[in-house]
Picture (tube, rainbow, N blue to C red):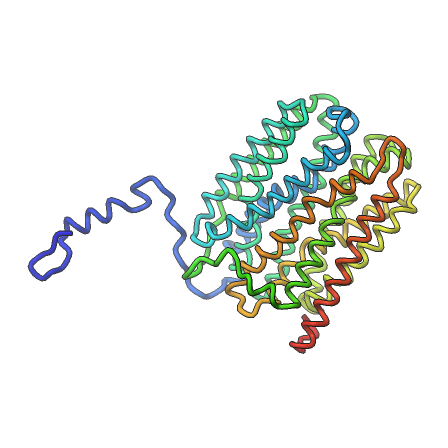
Length: 436
């Protein structure tokens, strides 16, 4: 470093430093910290909701739509593979969405939101394009399971983190609207796939979905901007959190209910076709019906939770979803499967939308709630990974035996609700926040 006569850096030294800024090196500059005043509305804030909506539309939306592919693979493209093997494609995709989301969190904290969205979009679209060209199981697993899953994981953290920084009293509404994107695409993508596949073929039906993903992701990339970044990026882990009994029991409860939660999303279409005798077209539409219920469940219960408390709303929703899962075993009519799909979709949507708000309430310091959300979903994500393959191993589709798989999934949901109740009781003993 060159110094002037007053021992200060010379101008040439300053120019050398400026020449190595991220912008001049061709790198993305991290987002700058903003003021502490939360907008809580306004055009710019609601545009962030729209951008995050499309991130969820293409992350959880593709996961929620996998049931359409599961049914098609079982009956056509991968008919020689078992239901359990096929379900690994969708569960690995969902598992990577959660796990990669946990790992990518510190990059978001450093302000690299656009980098995450670009990388996630490229991997998701590329994976879907490769899926459209695949014809063997291992090709499907690598493209749709691994590549798409890694891409979705890059999109997950921005979708759940950015909206909360723009809203305070309207946060429940904003988060609910954002979360509803996953259900809306869960309605649209199965219908698009089913309507286009017979006429255009599997390849072009999948490629058109990939083009929709690309177009909607460009909207998010254009309008999303991080409002604030922490002074220090959050830690990836806080092991001491698991020593807190309410948090540990809540995480264990999440593992149990996520193990059983997605079974109807994967198996209702094939159940309707094989057991009830619906047409293949109508069986596909049942997945859309589940997501219609889920759309409402992601919006309405968070608004109720704003008044009754997050825990007080989530706990009965998990339990009721489990009871409805047991009721699935006795559904043998067209009307019955439609009613089941609507109600299960509603309560499962609430179960997916509410846990982050509970984890924030369980955190002693909300500044580090992101770490705990990542830890809880990272541990509970293993339930997503193993749940549907276990269900697929229990179910016997050729013989029409679904009862064991249905009972297992429902029991996991009810067990999860019992663990959540234990967590709630322990929380009440230490904190008298009955409206939590």
